[in-house]
Length: 222
Image (cartoon, rainbow, N blue to C red; front, side, top):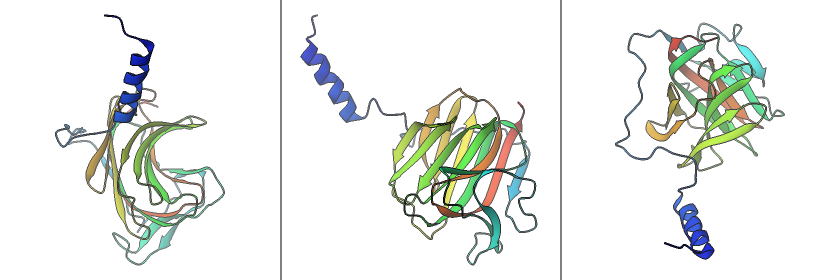
């Protein structure tokens, strides 16, 4: 069967309109949830008894502060730097291969950006990050290596400024899933990095609070 150039162009435009050429997103309630083994170690950071002296600050102004209405206790971790492209702090445990990470974040302010995210498989400055932004109605997964590459995106209701929200990501092998406020939105595969540490992330002028970082993971790699 002969297909004209016009028909090819028409079919391509239809695929784009349908979203077929967009990064893969999680899609249905039928998607099987990824799981790490039940018996893996668990590290929880609520910033009540210990600060971040043993953490690695890549960029940003990170400090533990008292905050009314904290999800647990009275203390939270706040990022107040506003002059970096990205702000990253990395927790001491790990590295991990398969990992299940959750945290709570409150976007406080930002004119360019008001975001919070989970960094995972951080190694040699490379990492994945899943993030939500109070100024945008999307939830996204990126890969970073001296520049940011979008891997997957989903349309969501923008998280409210001044409110606490929950982000969770599970990575098993090359398969990654991410949740915002308890709903699975992203389902993607990428094999660039297979192990690394876990951290927290903001962008640009975001001032963001974090609490209740919980890491369940299989330790391994470098």
